[in-house]
Image 1: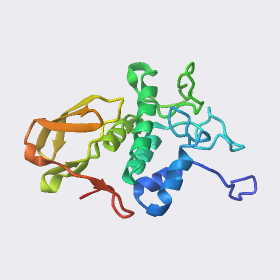
Image 2 (image 1 turned 135 degrees about the horizontal axis):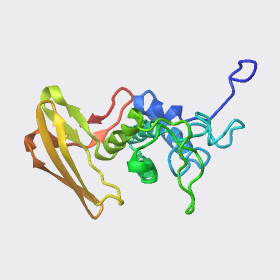
Image 3 (image 1 turned 180 degrees about the vertical axis):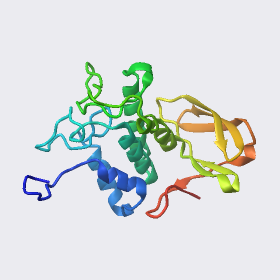
Length: 222
């Protein structure tokens, strides 16, 4: 809003949440994804809350161009939901790469939306909460975007559609709970193919399915 309380046209990260919720018509999803991944929105450490081309942009501010881990976690799920796996993995790598610069790999509430270069590192917002529950929870959103989890605990099923990116050769998930059951899943890549096995627990609880998307589904597996 401007000083007269009139709306100011802005490009922000919120439409990425619309992808996550499924309210974006499929024929418009690509436009949203590609717009969020343009350099004014994508910093290299994640997607900014506000375009760097906006007059109010300030990468060190709270909500005018900073990067929020939980924001990117939801956007990554939205990307995956509409079939943009490469973009979802890119955000996953952005945020996980940023985490190594913070003490004990604790993700702060937000960090500056400065562009990533070979000689820069993410700068924590001065008043950011650390630890922050929703920032810490972003790792699970990013993991879900990669593995394609769709739990159905009432029916005792865990559906997955794993696609490890080229920067993850192997991944093991321990103590994964499905209702009263516990599982250990192991994933690995052979070339471009992702393979998996249930290394502990009941294998019949886990089923791999190709996941499709739809405007009224969180993640539909068929």
